[in-house]
Amino acid sequence: MCGIVGYIGHREAWPIVIKGLKRLEYRGYDSAGIALISDEGLKIYKKAGKVTELENFAAGKNLSGTAGIGHTRWATHGAPSDRNSHPHTSNNGKLTIIHNGIIENYATLKEELKTRGHEFKSDTDTEVLVHLIEEIYKNEKIDLLEAVRLALREINGAYAIVLMDEEHPDQLIAARKGSPMVIGVGDGEYFIASDATPIVEYTKNVIYMNDNEIAFIKRDELLIKRLDNVVQTPYVQELELKLEMLEKGGYEHFMLKEIFEQSRSIRDCMRGRIYPNEGKVQLGGIKEYADKLKNIDRIIIVACGTSWHAGLVGEYLIEEYARIPVEVEYASEFRYRNPIITEKDIVIAISQSGETADTMAAIEMAKERGATIFGVCNVVGASIPRLTHAGVYTHAGPEIGVASTKAFTAQVTVLTLMAFYMAQQKGTLTNSKLVELLTELDCIPDKIQVALESNDLIKEIAGKFKDSRNCLFLGRGSGFPVALEGALKLKEISYIHAEGYPAAEMKHGPIALIDEEMPVVVIATKNSSYEKVISNIQEVKARKGIVLAIVTEGDTEVRKMVDYCIEIPDASEAFLPLLATIPLQLLSYHIAVLRGCNVDQPRNLAKSVTVE
Ligand code: HGA
Image (tube, rainbow, N blue to C red; front, side):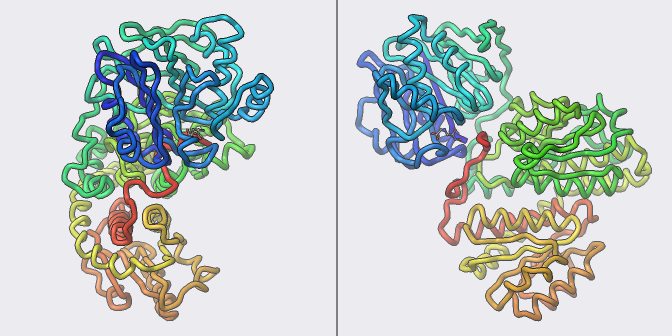
């Protein structure tokens, strides 16, 4: 959350920074702002709302300068408004800062700074930091880098910051702890951003900054040191990201493009990892732990939001095939309990961005208690993959729509592979059964392509549901996490209140909500709970609910009872979540579009939740 961009070099900074902010808008869109330094001094433009509003506001103004910093905000401290927009300036107006994170002890520092004559112009925690830096700089008679270093040692919380000084227009200072930051290395120029997407079209050479590092950046000089003053040798990596991955490619929204990419993304996720003819799974990222997997007592999965739903599918698959007990925890709750974790446990942390603050904190806690940690992340080089002992990337490619789609199915694919890999190590599945399952898994991308063909039908059904105020999603077994995910997607992007429930639990409460206006989406595919789900559909119909069923192709029984039906290809129960999720993603998408909602940037939400 919150996107930051910085540039210093020989080109005009404004176009680079504004384009970068558009790429990072998935991280927040409450306000946007840019500061530029030129011979005429420091200029700041900031505006509540999206980046385009900043662009309109600044049109025709003087936007020159070859050094600049920019920010797109997801507000934590202070309402979304012009005055709370970043960049924020120090008391004398010479220093200006952008920040992603939360300064937890800002209130105490603010009081103290006020007594020293500082006047604050915003309600943010961020502004306190730039005043603190100025105070130390002024009093200690040290250089600015040292003043920033000392200030950062006084604050609690998380940050990725970039600072400019009107009196030293040829330098930027950046630092990170707990929030992401990448530096792009060009020829006589440097780029700074929350992720590599604003950088990729200018250079492929990047440095991922580590926590507690501070960077001093000039056009032809880069110095990175730790907060304890030890100078670091930066590790320059080559980006694999391609520019076309960041474009809509002819689709109306990123979300639709990403839904339609799933056949490919799942194939990419499995590439080189499954050998169906041999009944073998290879996961290079966790192979060092192959022996440990034979004797573990328990797996704990920690995640948030959609990733937590993927975790529930993982629980079902790992228990079913590898016979290892699994617990699935919300990272945000897990870390504030006193959970029992031992060295015999494996913790699997799932996060699309690899930056989710709560998941990172849960990992730190589990690590301290001796557990082995595996990561399941999409963004290569993010913080979680660097924090964990081992892991498996989902390789879904950049996901830009705020509501997760292809990242979810890729997470489920990785967890499916992990379940089979663990079963292989423990010998809980015979080789012939593994051959059978992997052969079927290998065909799932083609079946997803078939499931996507219902798009027009789903759009038509969406028209019937678009004015609903509530919606219930029901499923059993591995269909239950699918119901939860279907409900979350609808809530997130269409603002219709929706609940996911285990179908059998409906009679313990939610059934009271059912009347002739209540749409109920039921996962009713042919699997072990088919008959039971049919009874649940009867219970809804007896109370005049409107039922949309997701059924196996060729089904006639459910079709007779319900109002609307969407077919998906036949598959074993293990693969049901991968297929049944597709129509639910499309349903939410079309309902949201018909309601005129901003599908890619739903209100109040942001991707990559880097605050706790
Ligand atoms: N705390 C700062 C930055 C917000 C942020 O990083 N959100 O993810 C603010 O409220 O402006």
